[in-house]
View (cartoon, rainbow, N blue to C red):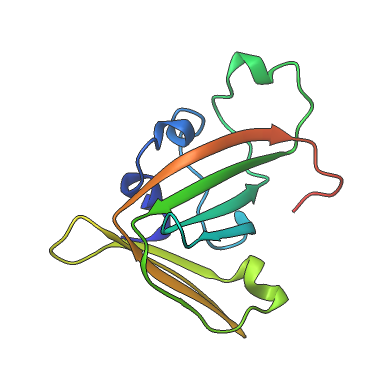
Amino acid sequence: MDDSDWTALVDSAEAITDLYASPPRLNGGACELFYVQIDERCTSVTLGFDTNVLPSHPPAAWAEKAYNTVEFHLKFTGVEGLRIAGWDAGARHATVALRRVAGATGLVFTLEGPGSFLGFTASTSRVTRVRPYLAATAL
């Protein structure tokens, strides 16, 4: 499964799929990673992405707002095997892969780029936040 199908792998994906006829790809410059929170107590990882791909079906509440960027967060729970190997400034544009664990219900997440690696398995994932905002400069 390529990164254009990522919404099929996460719970609460309607927070994204209701906005977009075709959700932005996690790779290829459509989305930029801007936030990583690792919570060892809850065995969770939350990732924040920005995209300047504007929704084809924005909610009525957004009509009054000036925005050129949409932010969304993906929270992974039941995280195991967390591995980080370097974190370069280019990690914002690294290659992201999200796939099902073969023969199981869990997911494998990896982020790889020159000087950066983040990888883990998770039992669940969900979209936890989506909001529009006006960025000072486009991505």
